[in-house]
Image 1 (cartoon, rainbow, N blue to C red):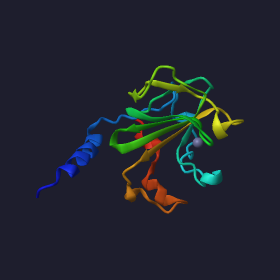
Image 2: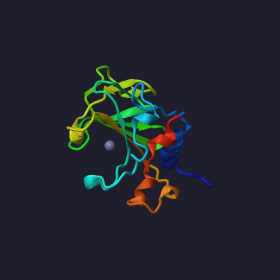
Image 3: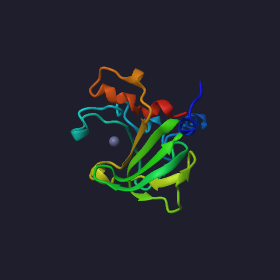
Length: 168
Ligand SMILES: [Zn+2]
């Protein structure tokens, strides 16, 4: 079967995304599995979002926020809910979303490796008035329909992954 060239190139790019190693580390320096609540992922009710599609890692304001994996920066700026946020595209076509940070790392970080400092932990956006924490979400652009379950908004689990499952 002959596949046209215009299909080969995107296909090669798509496949390449799966060939990059994808280690996952907890994106707050010095944090451990005791720094988030066991049921933080998909906690409900969660305001206008209905369910909490990520994990909240608590820590002291100013603690280093580090890249959870390899990534290409897509966005660094301010959003209404997330406050100061960073968005990276990582291996396996996954989006890494970091929110409520206090400040961004000063050096240019458009390409990051696991453990690179990208920001400091804070309480920006709708975390204002709450204990400082990093909100971290891991989203796959390629849906995993087998992850859908009967929970509220369960179909969204084909996109929003539980980050805890991906920490080494
Ligand atoms: Zn959160």
